[in-house]
Image (cartoon, rainbow, N blue to C red; front, top):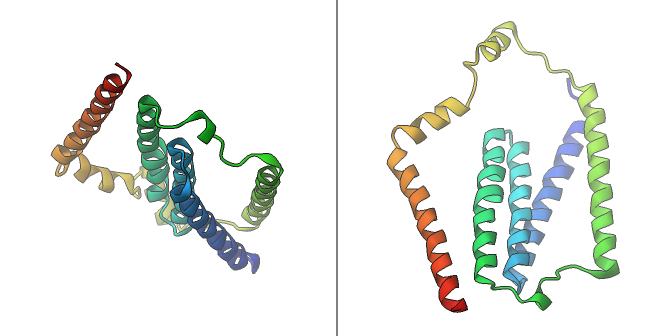
Amino acid sequence: MQNEFYPLFYAFNFYLFGLIALVSAIVFVTRKSPVAAALWLVLVMFALAALYVMLDAQFVGVMQVLVYAGAIMVVFLFVVMLLNLGQPSELHDIRGRLGRIAAGLIGLALVAELLALSRTALDVRLELPAAASADVVRGTAGIIGPVAAPLFTQYLLAFELTSVLLLVAIIGAVVLAKKRSA
C-alpha cells in the first residue's frame, strides 16, 4: 500500500540525483587538479548508483559503488598521487563562505529526504505471497548467483586478464614515477 506522497517523492529524488550527476560531471570536466576531478567523479558515481537503486536495479547500484566509486577510483587516485600530478595551489576546490553555504543546504536537503523516507517507509507495508517468501527463505530467489555464475565460468579468462591489466597499469605508473623523480 503506497500513499499519494510516494510518486512525488520518487520524482523529486530522481530529478535531484540526476541534477547532482549532471552538475558533478560538468564540474569534473572543468577541474584543473586531477585529484579534485577524481573526487567529483566519485560523486557522479554515487549519484548514478542512487538512480540505479531508484530504477529497482539494486545489484547494479551496489556494484556501481563497490567497483567504480570504490576500487577503480581508489586505483586512479593512487596513480594520480603517485605521479604527483597535482600542484598544492590547485588542490583547493570549493572554499569560502559560498561553498560552506551550498554544502549546508545540500546537507539539510538530504536530512529532510531521510526524514521523509523514514516516514514513508513506516506507512508502506510489504506483503509477500506465501510462495515468494518461501523462495526468499530458501535462497532461490536471489539475483547474484545468476549474475556471478557466468563471470566465474564462461568469462573467467576475461576477468583474470582484466585484473592482470590493472596490475600492469599500476606497475607502469610506479616505473614512470621513479623515472621522473630520478
